[in-house]
Amino acid sequence: MKNLRIMAFALMALAFGNQPLAAASCGMPAGASSLKDTAGNILERERRGAGAGRIKRNSRLDQAAQVQACYIAQRGYSRTKPHHGANGSTPMVRIRAAGYKACLSAENLAVNFPTAEGVVGEWMHSPKHYANITLSGVREYGLGLAMLGNQPVWIMVLAKRC
Image 1 (cartoon, rainbow, N blue to C red):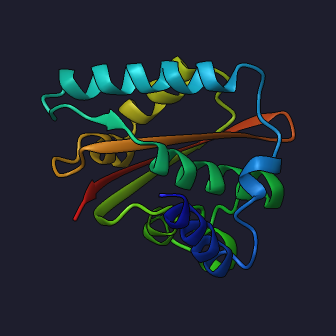
Image 2 (cartoon, rainbow, N blue to C red; image 1 turned 45 degrees about the horizontal axis):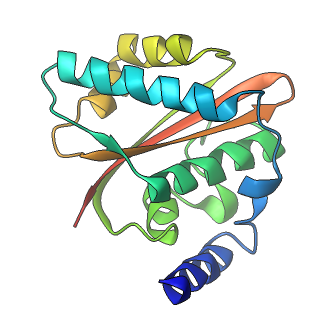
């Protein structure tokens, strides 16, 4: 298992130009873990309420989401390519680099929502974000949270294993 983790970090280093450790070095809001837990609970409840089935949090997807949240926090938010990360990486590239073998993935992003209720509420009222949250094939999700100046950057990735 330890060798697999080392290999995953090595792959991330290749995929992100030696930037995977950015997730550990970016600023996070106070209570980030609690905020992500609350957002996850709300997400699970909203998804069940929409009839989309159960979904559970996955630590590898958390890692993929955190890498992107930190990337945006460090480099800024791009309105033209908001879901592209280091070296042009896509959500699927980041998910696989985190060691999660996905066949299906989606990503939601939000900036400047200080509460878990606010960010999930916004996603639920946005047709494209709602479609990702209720995507029938996904079964797991991960959350990332970082600070871009004084603005929280939220990333949620959803995926289905192959």
